[in-house]
Structure formats: C-alpha cells, structure tokens
Image (tube, rainbow, N blue to C red):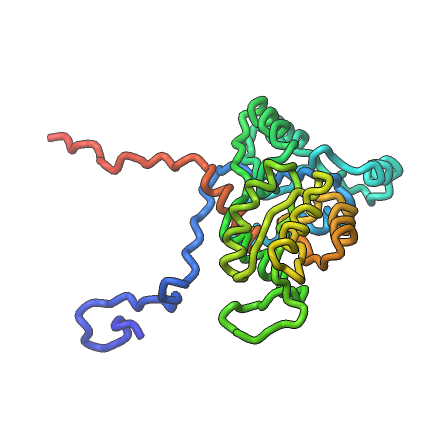
Length: 303
C-alpha cells in the first residue's frame, strides 16, 4: 500500500512492483525504438505448406517475445512450384503470394522505409549465406550472424530428445528411461563446416545429458552413418539422432533417411521452440543502430 493513502504521511512513497527476484528471473525486454527497421527472417528453404506453417508459428513466437516488432519471413529461393501455380490460378483467395527476401527488401526501399534487418534462420554455415550477404550489400540491409552455437540450442535439443523418450527431461532426476540414448549424433545441414560448428552445441548438450555427443551433416553422404559407427565403436549401445535444424532447411527425406540408414531413433526438429524465437529477437535487437542521445544541456539564459 502506498503511503499516499495514509493520513499524515509526509511524502508519498512509490510501492515497488511485483517483479520476480533472483538470478533466474527473466530480464526486462528492451523496447524496439520508434522508426526501427523491420525484421526479415531469411528462410533458406522451399516454401512448402509444412514449412510455411512452422515459420508462421515461429513468427508468432518472435512477436510474443518482442512486442511491437515488425517481423516477416522471406524465402530463399522463393515459393514452391505448387504455391506459385495456386497463385496463378487464383486459388489463394486473393491473398499475396509468399514473399522472397529480395521482394521484401525491394518493397521496403519502394516505400522509403529503412532497410530491414536480415536474420538467417540458420544455426551455422550454409551455402545460402553468400546469397544473403550479396543481397544485404546491394540493398544496405543489416545481416546478423547465424543463431548458433548457443546454450539455448542445447536446451531445445535436450527437450526434443526428452519428448521422444530418448533422454531424461531433468538431469537432476536420477530415474532411468529404458529407451534413453547412451550416445547422440547431433545432425545438421550445411556441409562439414556446419557440422564442425554444431560440435560446440554438441559439447553443451553432452554436459546436459552426460553422454557422448558427436555432430554430423545430413547433407554429406556417410557423415551421419560414420558418426553412429564412431559412437558404437566407443561403447554406445543405444545411439540416437538429434536434429539441430528448424525443419524447413532440411529436405524432408534427409531426416527420415538418416534414421532408416542407421537404424537409430530420432528426435523431432526444433521447429518453433520458444528459445529459437528468443535467439532471433536477440539477434535483431543487437543489430539495431544505437539510439542517438540528445544533448540535455539547455541554452544558457540571456542576461
């Protein structure tokens, strides 16, 4: 209760809010400054209906994470042939077609708006990055770093493994799971360079699970199988696969094919897991230009 309501109180005293305390409390969200550029989530995938659904859900997470943000998804290389055909036949109900990164950048320029901030929906190196870098150079857009490696990604993969019954949900609970994996292959896309970068997240995941973790590239023939054989050679009897992908950037047959080829169960892709939205929002905010502070000094009074 504020002392402003107490008779005889000398001065009103502001009552502290009920914000959570302690080192685990959620930090206050920084505000998006007025006139800030939009966020364009650059998706290196074909815009299939399944991929669009995942990305739209992720955009909702991002907007919930950072209210006031103007966010849209741009696709590389663009809409699928099926979506383009539907648009040509008028089957989309008059709705705009799925935009590409290039079309969103062009629309911002035509409207006289600031060049958007491009956030790649990638966790490491990828063949699409040079294309994004060129688009950013041509348009003046800001291109952020990829989203990984990061401890939040290790958390997300851990949760997906636990949902599949392949790991304990909480390492502090010491009960056993019959299907729990005793070794994990962290699968990603983008070639061997991406697999090497994913190895850092793998180290963080291994610390959470207390089992060996190795990274492999889904788009490099034999990479996942070789990683599974390595785990088995070092004593793992129940290796499992853990995708370090959102979903759209990995061709649908890659995940299924890796599981069938190795005979190992696989967790689901990360999809619109909340921490992915946090990483996107953080990358966007970090890329915004620092606000220009006005000089607080007032003109001197004339005599």
